[in-house]
Amino acid sequence: MTDTETRPAQSPEAAAHPLDPASGAEFLAGRDILAAVGLLGETVRFAYYGLDEPPKDQVLAGRPDRRLRAFLIDGATGESADVVVSLVEGRVVSRRVLDTATDGQLPIYSEEFAVVDDVVHADPGWRAAMARRGLTDVTKIRALPQTAGSFDEGDDERRRFVRVLAFRQEGEHDYVWAHPVDGITVYVDLVERKVFKIVDEFERPVPEESGDYDDPEVRGPLREGLRPIEITQPEGPSFTLDGHRLSWQGWSLRVGFDAREGLILHQISLDGRPVIYRASIPELVVPYGDPRFRYWQTYFDCGEYLLGKWTNSLERGCDCLGEIAYLDATLPDDFGAPQEIRNAICIHEEDFGILWKHTDIFNGSAQTRRQRRLVVSSWATVGNYDYGFYWYFYLDGTIEHEVKMSGALFTAAYPGGDDPHAEEVAPGLGGPVHQHLFSARLDMTVDGPVNAVDEVDLGGMPVGPDNPYGNAIARTVTRLRSEAQAVRRCDAARARTWRVVSTERTNAYGKPTSYTLYPDGTPVLLAAPSASVHARAAFATNHLWVTRYDPSQRYPAGDFVNQNPGGAGLPAYVATDRDIDGADIVLWHTFGPTHFPRPEDWPVMPVARCGFTLKPTGFFDRNPALGVPPPHGHSPGPAG
Ligand SMILES: [Cu+2]
Image (cartoon, rainbow, N blue to C red; front, side, top):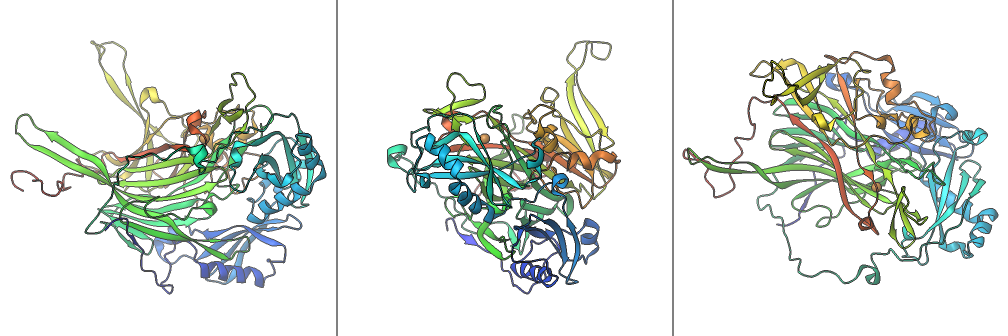
């Protein structure tokens, strides 16, 4: 069999595990509770709706409440509220109306995107500005709403608004990213539903060359000579999926999903030993580096746009090869009504080359084992970019997270010359420099909830009595004892890693069992300390943060990211500088590329990768993969 698809048996009556995503029936039940107390007027919309995960102690004790969290916004007044309902008790547990000037705004909801297009096209000032550029047929202009950020803009700061850029689309299939209409932004108030400001700074010719890679004229002839590669697993896959619980080769985990964070993994254990209680990518910030007209351009793809909402339906044979199990996702629309995303999560096994190998020159043993990994992945398209989130579990106990980035560059007109902030990627078309800074939230439970973090550096030593020949390399281990001390940067010159140790369990050598975080070590946020984004994306100014577990501390840039003035999330979480040495702790790791586009990234970008690795370090007493059998037909050794 090739590229087959299986689905877990799920009876609708089966009691949900406390960490399972909210079901369609639960979204509807929660909506009924909200409606019954009058919170769902005609103009009220759901800007977010998802499972309010129970605290860890309640999950481990057995019978937690089942709660949903809704961000409700009244489209007519802008009143924004954070509401929690209990499905077990059938009541509203809490409701807080936001002070949006200080708390931030709720995420943009779907209807607002449509509204903006109508509002902009109807605006006489914008039409006049387009006409001045020779663009008289405004049906060919696409209005692209962008989250506004937070700057010193006086009374305008109190509005719920977006900044809107324009792109030209000649025909229905024209590729808009090839044709930015630069120099003009309109500001649209989402509550008043009107343009309140037009910034018209300069005019540049709209780049003309088509980027429509579906067009044979643009793409050129299809290559020849690529013969089929087929992945076959004649006996089926080696994993089992029971509801949302996945097991494979000693690994066990639960697969969750949410409109904001996308893929969430829970209760990851190996050979019955806990490793991570919860792992997700709860934020992604994309700040752009053009200091001129687009200084405000920064996207928080989770907190402002709800990344999980834009999850793709995956296709067998294209997105995933081999014996695939899919999970569907149930996500609410603006009205809190459940919508299915079919094949949202792909689960499969991959061959991954050599696991270990040795040809012994003395005893003649020549052995090779093949590595394999279990892959849990999903893709989301947020505007121009496409992000694939891949969690890998290996036969030797390694866990890896990889983000695959593809899609379209966010383009501008190229100003000419040798611009330090952009690359010309097509005639007159610029790809501005930007960063993609992801935050991984890793609620660690290495051999139990009581953990600590050691920073481990490697380095040479000065010549002296302990190092007479100068060849010494030494390991320096520093325990990070408090939250303030654990705000750290990578140091590639010292091969810096962070080791998450159990403070309760030791291995055969009397050392604490641990898992080590190996970072990529790419730059953190490059914006100046006084920049607005520096305060708003403070999480991205360092590679590592460690906090003491608090069930309410879930998002590195805070709960309400859209138009948040800054300081929320991690800087607030660590403000009390709690003790993290021998505690239930959460690691927050920043990673991702600083992307100066290449011409080869246009018109669609070959996948770029980033991520991090977690490896067992004294978690086992020796290579845990000795028992992996040799490939079929090969001998495991003289006694085999
Ligand atoms: Cu990029």
